[in-house]
Amino acid sequence: MWAVGVLAYVLLSGLSPFAGDNDVETLKNVKACEWDFDEDAFANVSEEGKDFIKRLLIKNKEKRMTAHECLLHPWLVGDHSDKMSVINSSRYVSMRDHIRSKYDQWEDYPVAIGRLSEYSSLRKLLIDKYRIQSTSFDRRQAAPRFVIKPQSAFAYEGQSVKFYCRVIAIATPTITWYHNNQELRQSVKFMKRYANEDYHFVINRVKLDDRGEYIIRAENHYGYREEVVFLNVQPLPKQVPTYRPEEQLRR
Image (cartoon, rainbow, N blue to C red):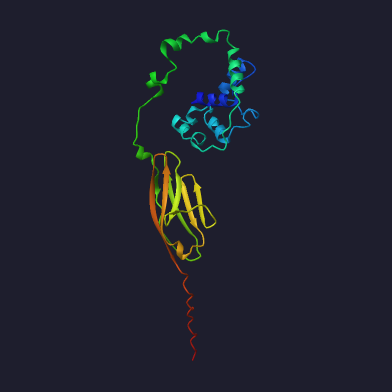
């Protein structure tokens, strides 16, 4: 995954993230994982693209994105139709020529004999060393799950009502609310609040028309689940005169 981050950096900018004035400095930068984004080269690269690289060029390999997480990253799965622009091919050409200039015989670049004889760079041939295990799961198990389900509520006209639930999933789910077969979008009346896996839905100044069945739908790439709640709205009760007992007359 480290190599994916380096390749993404090179292809987007035409530069090497760890390039130094010489090979020694370059090696030091790699070992220390010291790099940054060149302002000019990344001027037209989206924040999602930069985030993709940031989450791969991390010294601690345990904190890097996995291949599965990379495929689900917003930079790859999001809608970027309004940001699509052709990157000048001169960036790639300049990088290619820079690398070629380091070797007199580019086509005959020698491979290290140790790797060639033992294929020591292939993790799949060192299962015990890297603790590689095969696993599988049912696609339906990756769909969102409600670990805390929303509860039905009661309110008087003019009051606010809050529904709460907790949803977990491998891939971040999209949460939508429906009432009378219509999606309730974010507004002053309908307010959605998210915090990690906790989801809140607030209805402000409820009316009698707001009562009824509400459906919360959690959906991701692997499937969806729905929960149903009911909102009971009643008119404000008329104020009942407070009974005040008369003071007893002293004899």
